[in-house]
Amino acid sequence: DLSRARDRLQAEMSDHRSTEAKLQVVQQDLVQANRLAILGQVAAGVAHEINQPVATIRAYADNARTFLDRKQTGPAEENLGAIAALTERIGSITEELKAFARKGRTAAEPVELRGVIEGAVMLLRSRFAGRLDALAIDLPPPSLKVMGNRVRLEQVLINLFQNALEALDGRDDAHVQVSVEETADGVTVAVSDNGPGIPPGILKSLFTPFNTSKEKGLGLGLVISKDIVADYGGRIEVSSDDSGTRFTIHLQTAA
Image (cartoon, rainbow, N blue to C red; front, side, top):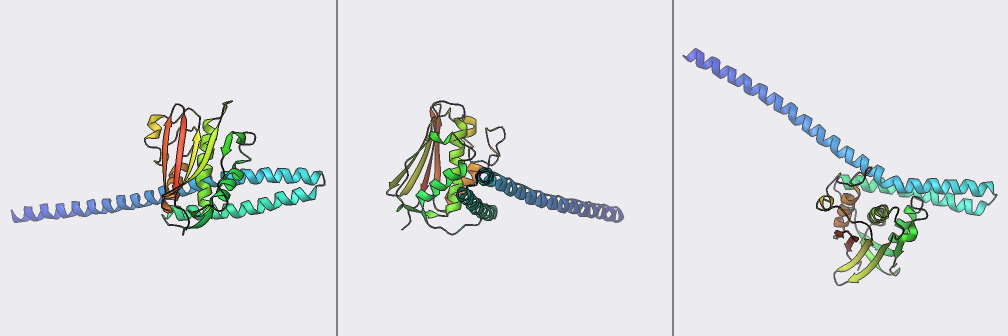
C-alpha cells in the first residue's frame, strides 16, 4: 500500500511539474502577445498621426516644383521652408506617441489656443483641399492660452476636424462650426457638424480602441485624443443624433 501511495504521489508530482511548465510557457506567450499588441497599437498610432503632415509635405513639394519651373524662387523657398518645419513636426509627433504608449505625461505648459487651431487647419489643407470652406471657425484672441502641448493638442483637433469633414463628404450643405468659450472652469472648444450623426452602437463605445464605423479607419484617433486631453486635466464630451454631432473639449486655462 505504501509503495502504491508513493507511486501515486510521484505521478501527481510529475503532473504538477508538467502543468507548471505549461503554465510558464503560456504566461510567456501572453507576455509576448501583450508586448506585440502594444507595439502594434503604437505603430498604428504613428501611421495614423503622421498621415496629415506627410500629405501636406507632398503638396508643398509639388508646389515648389511648379514654382521652380516658372523661375519663381521666392514662393519655392517658402514651400521648402514649410516642408522642413513639417518634418520636424513629424519627429515631435512620433516622440509624443511613444510617450503616449508608455502612458507617460508630457509636461503641460501655456499654449496659445489660436495657434493650435490654425496649425491643425494647416495640416488638413492638402487632404481636404476645396472642402475646408465647410469649416467655420471663431478664432479666439492670441492672448487666450490653455495648459497642454501644442503638437499634442493639434493632434486632438486634427482628429475632430477630420472626422467631421469625412462625415459630411458629398453633402452640399456641409457645415462644421468651431467655437471657443471661456468659462469659470476653463476653456471649451466645440466642434459641431450637421452630418448624419454617429450610429448608437458606435457611440456607446466611441472611445474604445479599434472601434470605428469607417471602412479604412483604425479606431485610434479618438482614443488618443481622449488620453491627450486627460493628460492635461481636461475631458472630451460628445453628443450625436440624426441632425449632427458635437464634440466638446474642456481644457484648463493657463494662469
